[in-house]
Length: 254
Image 1 (cartoon, one colour):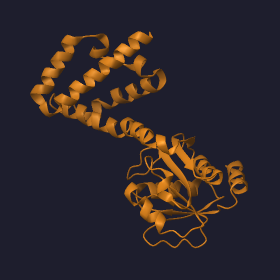
Image 2 (cartoon, rainbow, N blue to C red):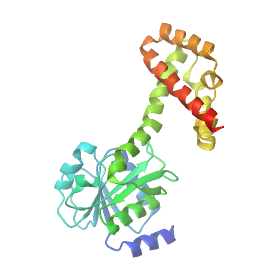
Image 3 (cartoon, rainbow, N blue to C red):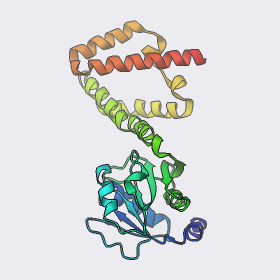
Image 4 (cartoon, one colour):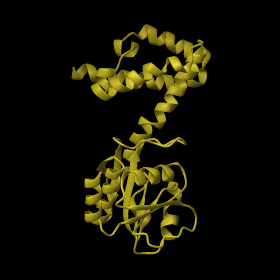
């Protein structure tokens, strides 16, 4: 960590005091993690409305996407200004020298562990991007530069991997409840599946009746869904179709 602190202080001497604006989950989690990870940058905040930015060299906005441009417009020129949005480009921060830092990690009310996760970074100048990269590394994140025109796709992938996964497991939980199966019994299966996907890739990790071509079992599953949770039938059908496509892709690649 001392090596990192020397790198931060020598590489970005203009940023020794970072103000974080936004008292939500992410603002609190980032402020806490940065204070624990480095002494090279003094972290101020998280701050609320009408923040006192006296002495700050850079500002990191941890506010909802729709409030980024408004919050940036209220900051006097001369500071590096960044946001933590995954989908928003740096144009929302004009005319400031701008940077982006989006941790590819879910943050709940209990906080987050950033170390080892990815981070989408960007900068309107080399200095701004360098700051984003060093903040990411101070948090233990693995930074990757994402261009503005790729941010929507990047963020869609993150939503599918995280948000939609929770929605899918909620669907599984509802169906399981109709058979008297508690959520706890599904958890080891979910964890093993995610680990298999991480290690093997989607085609080799895929198991189950669709992958085996067992259409009779799939049809019985469909009938059960139609009877017990009919509101989930369209989603079930769409997932079966997508899984068949994945199984075919895996067969062609084998």
